Length: 68
Image (cartoon, rainbow, N blue to C red; front, side, top):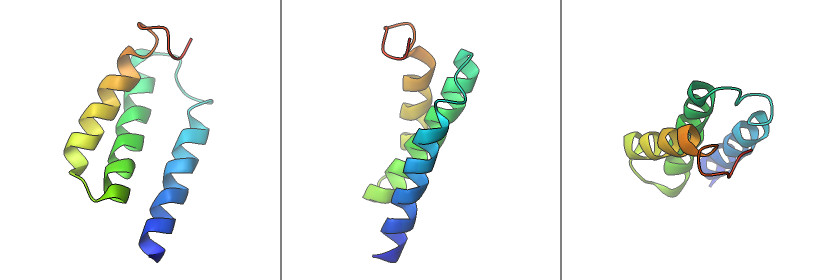
């Protein structure tokens, strides 16, 4: 239970940092990969898949008008 709380705090911290980063696609992809990996760890999923999905979402979020 303590591990899940720690990981949840990590996800919140990374999400908060998203306001500081995100000037380029690479910045958003790196942040997305981190958030995706931590999110996958919280729910017991595959870290590599979580990081990949997060990186993809971060890289294209401005192209689809989500993070502008």
